[in-house]
Image 1 (cartoon, rainbow, N blue to C red):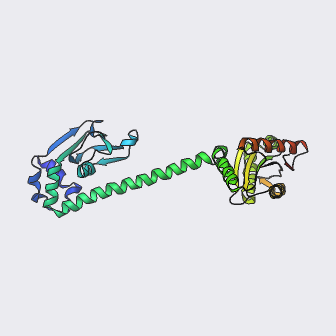
Image 2: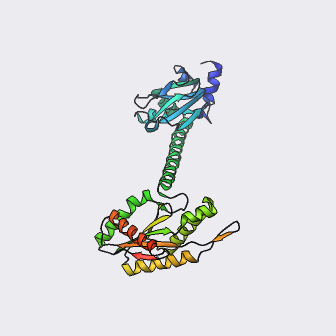
Image 3: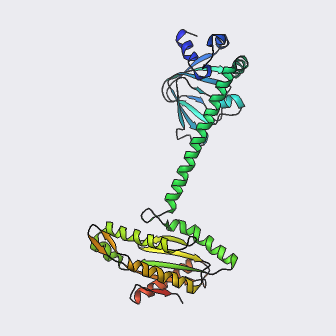
Amino acid sequence: MNATDRALTEQNRLFQGMDFTSVEYMLEHCSVRSLDTGESLLQPDVPNHHLYLIFEGKLSVHLAAQESLEHATLGAGECVGEISMVDGKLPSALVVAAEPTRVLSIPRDTVWSLVDHSHEIARNLLGIVTGRMRNDNRALITSQDKKKQFEHQAYVDALTGVHNRHWMVDAFPRALHRCELNRSTFAIMIVDIDHFKRVNDTYGHLVGDIALKTVAQCMAESFRPHDLLVRYGGEEFAALFSDTDLEQAKAIAERLRNRVADIVIQHEGISFQVTVSIGIATQQEKKLEGLIGEADQALYRAKELGRNRVVIFS
């Protein structure tokens, strides 16, 4: 080993806090390996029996299940291969050179001899392994957080903040099934903002969006925590009320209708009010599609009768 490589070896994390000269002789038969950009050092399907100390360059780590995504980058002074070298199992990652890289390859038997010889090396190796595990745990937590964020984005309407129709397809049938098992009453409500096209044509879509958010917020505040609310499409919203009979559903709808009618929507000197028409269907129909269809018919009837009213399907 030349003087430059000796200095790089001594500076590696594996030998921190110890007298390197006491173990230098154990590395006499270790080889230095040069990697071209893109060349693999570790592969998930190839057994590994070495610990690699990085002299120069960078290694890119890709988890076996996500080889198209970079998991981590390792540089000079760091190690790689320690986990598969210790447990004797296949590597859990694909490790490739991100640029021309040189590493010192230490066989497993030599690693264990170093550990037996020096408590400092044993502690350093343990620190390297646990550090890698901590980093992987943080990456897992980050991945789970991103997954939750993606799920939230998939099921929540970005404009109004209430759930969207995609979420409804799963949540409403499950709620109806629970009502059926518990033999409890329920009701479906479809709410439509009256003359919403006129709002957009008169004040513009930005103000129309404000009106949508205002009505959605009013609905969310008017309903009970266990009631289900979604933006059904455009200016329409759908709600499912469990443990609710016909008279209770009508009372909820009338209260909502009055609250919306009392709201004054304001934006940059513009001031106006909107009303809603509401159609209600109860448990005469067991299927979600049928209930939505009945509530839609009741809503259509409410509009025929002049809007700003509640109609129950019969």
